[in-house]
Length: 341
Image (cartoon, rainbow, N blue to C red; front, side, top):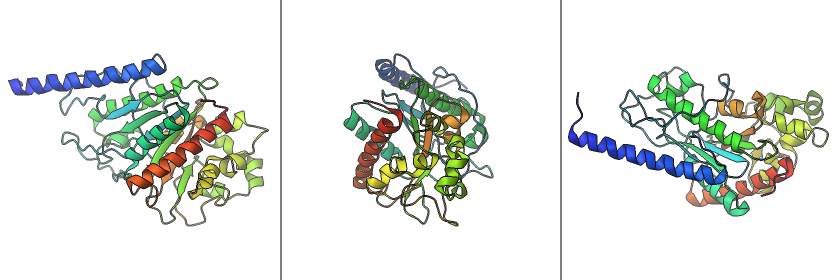
């Protein structure tokens, strides 16, 4: 069927908007690094899902599409920055396009992590205000009903093939942001930001270690070298002999320790080293596996699951928490990675 004059005009307007968006993103990336790629995000689960694939080359910009040819440039949003930090917000998307079917696979989770998109933006802004350097920011704009940015491709898309280029663009963007990090070649940190509704109101930090592993004593964690099989494997190798496994996971200078010192409950942390038996805990998902150093990459990754009350619930609380977390991340990058803004 031929497009009407109105439809053709709309298509041309959409195309111009997409091109303008890409030009702006390329300009930002060029100023920071002299290169560009699209980006997107992911989300959390109790256990890692899927097997990470090799880095995916960033695709070109497709033309505005029909329901059978989705535009991969529209749904992931990315801003590249100069800090060795990448913030991903995979489950905060609000778009529910009619031309994308709802995911209905047997294992599909479709509930969004409320207010995490806004929280991610505020963390990036706060970090830049504190350090003068902006982290890379990757946001999945699609609702989780339509697309899950923290799953392997089949579950992420619900088996809807036209969404596959979005998945590819998303992970290509994160891969590109990782490659652009300039600390000791490419050393830096990915934060996969989520929200939970568990009974215990605290931040859950996921290193791909189970709750039962975290319940081991410090001496056992150290003897087993537990951090060597975590999503901060490379950090553990870099700090071998200087910092123990237990200290990296829950010592005062760990991310949990810094968050706790800022006034927010967290696990693992010095005063809350592990979830108790029967307590719910998210230890990391697909993004933490794929984009962390356990898979052999140079970047480490930590999933942060945020409780709602006092952290995500109001604009004031999001702003306050974003500032505290940004300060903790800046200190963590300085202490553990030797980063100087």
